[in-house]
Image (cartoon, rainbow, N blue to C red; front, top):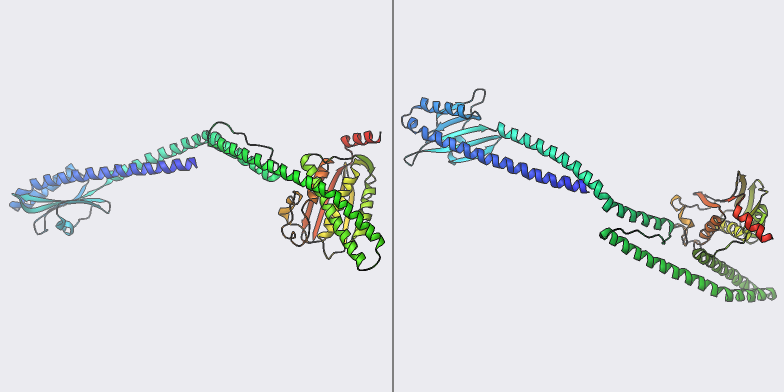
Length: 454
């Protein structure tokens, strides 16, 4: 932008300079030729009075020797008839009679200067001197001026570019640094990093205002997370009591439709209880208080038990396990790993309506255990593959039709991260596969498991 502005300003300045220089030359040339025409007119009065056209022509020939740029010249009488004329060899003749009626005048036309000067004798008009002047000198001046302007413009652009590079570190770099911080905010959702203001210019003021804004956002986020944590914790106790009473009523009630009503109420209480647990987990994650209870266990046992437990409540889909048995003891939080598997199975069933199966595929790859949960439902758009692991994010196409708060995958990602594992998705229309990758051995978890056993 700085180079473009410099080029524009320099171009306008050079255009004005060349225009004024050429205009000045034309004015000086016109005045000079007018003066010469007046001299010729004064020297031709006797020749006109005595009708001596040879003398007049000789005067015009001598004029051409003095000013070679005059290619056509003529002396007209009062009737605008040619009294004497001269044409430079190799040049076509020219008829001056068309503009003779204009009187004393000079003008430029078709790349030539035309001069008309009235000849007076005792204040009586007796004729007119006419000249057509070529402008080869003007063309040379134009060419020279354009060349000089172009060279200076190129040099100016180079200097402007160098200056722009030097100035960029003071203007562009702070702005780009602030932009990078904003991008990290949008990608990670973490508002703890702040921009670094330097100096007292506008960029520093912008960085300070931005930091203040982010501080307010962070404070509001903390208050929101604190409210969610308190509200979820306070709802947990009465909801547990409600669930206990409903379970008692369900055990003693045998008549329909009362028993059906109680079971429906229990079903919705379980959904509400799961939501509260998710909110509590989110609150713990945000506050850094989600702790893992590490123990050593067979990963195959957890997978098989999770499938069996989920199959009881999901009668519309058959959960099929494929691949090799892992036969691996790992050190991890058994309950949290089971929570991740249950969440993925729940999503697979939820987002594949009308289908009848979900596949869990397991395999061991070097130092990693790979678990794939695969469904054949509606799929997830490519641009949403990373976004679905964000807090409260729900897919755009399906969020209205399918219930949920967008917390499950966010919690799963955090649990896998705390286990030094990974979770990702591959999806296309009609097929979705979530992958879990767990390390076979993790020193910090193995040590924690040994301490717990002791």
